[in-house]
Amino acid sequence: MSDALNTYGDYARLIFFLLADRATIESHTVAVYTTSQTIGITRGDVVFRSGHMLRVFEQVDFVAHRIVRYSYELTYEGEPVWWYDSMPHPDVPELQSTHPHHKHIPPDVKHHRIPAPDMSFTRPNLPVLIREIEALLKH
Image (cartoon, rainbow, N blue to C red; front, side, top):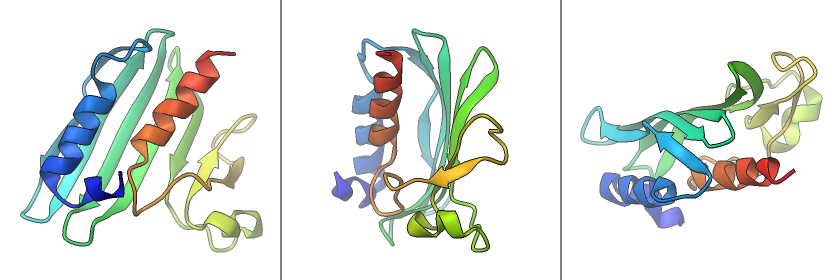
């Protein structure tokens, strides 16, 4: 799966097949498009049958084969459930194990952050997120 960041076509196919005909997903607007010869953007919403919605944003450098930055936010009925982002917080010791990757969680979603060991700049994150959400929906 790490090869998916090699080219725009590889990554677009991964996203398309990941979201196609999935029983838990009602619809999505996720698109992968280029902004230059080397940079791609992945952006859109994934609506789950449960009513949860995942908002996706990624900037991908297909020459460096890496995600440059990302933001993923899960909401339910318009309220944030959690979100992941890669904004550095070098002054927060408890986040250093996965710096800069971290997850915002309740009770104070904006300020309560934990390490995010499953997030990466060098492999696709969307498959991990879909699995996490599907596991959440089973409970």
